[in-house]
Amino acid sequence: MFSRPLTGKKVARLGILLVIFIILGYCAISIFYALFYTTVLNRSLGQESPASYGLPFEEVTFPSDAPDNLVLRGWWVPNPEARQALIMVHGQNQNRTSLLPLAKGLWASGYSLLFFDLRGHGLSGGDHHTFGYFEQWDVVGAADFVRGKGFGASSIGAIGWSMGGPTTIMAMSQSNNIKAAVSDSGYANLRPLHHHELLYPGILLASRLFRGYDPEQIQPGQAITKLGSRHLFLIHGEQDTLIPVSEFEELKKLGGSNVTESWLVAGAGHISSFNKDPEEYLRRVRAFFRVELQ
Image 1 (cartoon, rainbow, N blue to C red):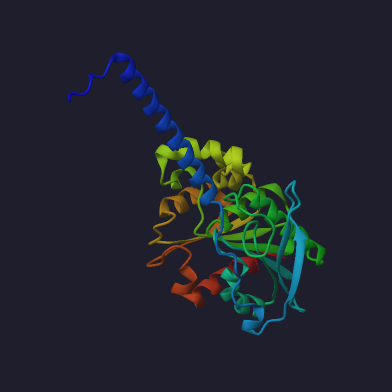
Image 2: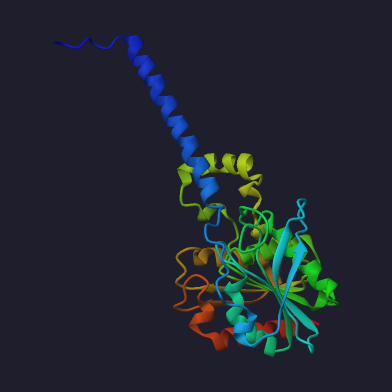
């Protein structure tokens, strides 16, 4: 038995069905990526705390400065002799414990420290993150908390790793309560880092519809031009395959005189510069804040 030849109408119907299938598939994949990349699957803090490094601490909560006033949770590590304080800002899929290896060296240098979980991470509120869009206001809220501990704006610094670095830069453009910051393994613009260029328009729309943020407005490279007389120390691993060195160079170029220190670490990957040479890392960070904070 021979099958009937396809008529023009049947071909048209099949073509329409194929187009609908492609559009629906594109939408579904875009929504999946928009949701998946902003959801932290493992939010456990593990067993480490400042006590693991012999440091005193207290559990604290404070609100984000974002419109939702989301409750953020963290550790306040007070130093009774401190005249300055540092806010520690982790990256995507991390939490407050990520920067703990820096704690003892910085605390011993005379700083009080605030470690906290950004929204959608660790024990803080929220079920997703936004690559810095709302997190910048989490950092502003953290600075407000430190101000409440009696530290003046000129005495507060911050250290941000990966997403935490650009987030801190954007926070500084929104608030004067952070005098200086270290950004390690940061980026100038989120768009060039997107590995699914074909899907980007769909992910952009899905992010706006389902996550309530616009990835196009995540522009640390623009924020860095709005810091006034405040300064940054940029650090990047020469072998970083997640965020290329070109992003470090772009931030450095856009920052101009606001970037008073920069360090491209030979042989280091993404946020691994501290592990590459802990003593030199701490020496440079301490020297930077010694000059910048009052």
